[in-house]
Length: 282
Image 1: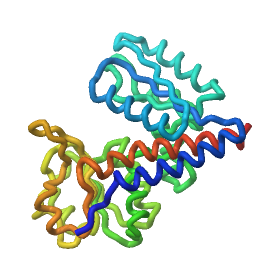
Image 2 (image 1 turned 135 degrees about the vertical axis):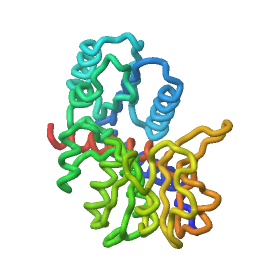
Image 3 (image 1 turned 45 degrees about the vertical axis):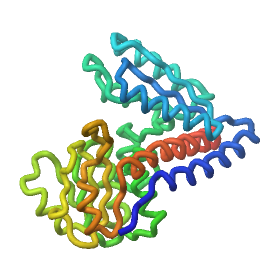
Image 4 (image 1 turned 90 degrees about the horizontal axis):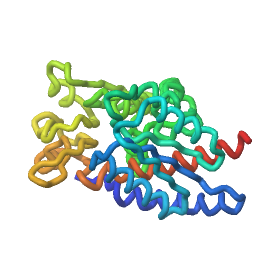
């Protein structure tokens, strides 16, 4: 069994990004990322702080627009429009979830596609499904980068994705299909989850349910990627029973230290990509 070490790979990517930032600065361009944070959700605040710190470490400009939960949708859309027009901001990220009185879809669609470094805009999602160049959501993109780093060829492999969210499951499916994998996608209405996971060469899970995937649900030699983040007895754990599943897997991601660090690394890469594209299109 080998560990797919996202922490180690993310540090390698950050060093590469840092060099690219230095090159862009020589041309007078400082890659800039704006983050919109609404409310005081502790988890969201932590994620935003981590993203800002990561930007600063690689030399990017980063700004966080914080708003109270009472902000109106109109006010939020007005801020997005302002950021869209700002030539010094190359990437715009809306930290989710948003308060219930705000239409999340409407807000995400308001982000300029060329600044959509989270890859959530329908324009980018559509291009992703078609296999065209686009901004892909950072978490599934990070999983693909792990496969690349460890020379895991997905062509022809049977892959089971557990979770069908717009943020992870659906874009994960698109990236895998584009890599010529045969993809089975499961969700809360799937009747016999084990029947799907048992026959898969690769199992990717991200639903937020501790120990959802147990050893009897994977075949010997399977590659297991755990995207889940859960808190159990004060400890961070994934959706996979790591201790027992790792005894059967050929490769497996730990939680923490697997996919999590890759998400932020991919955000940095997407922001660099956005800065370069906007430079070309000036």
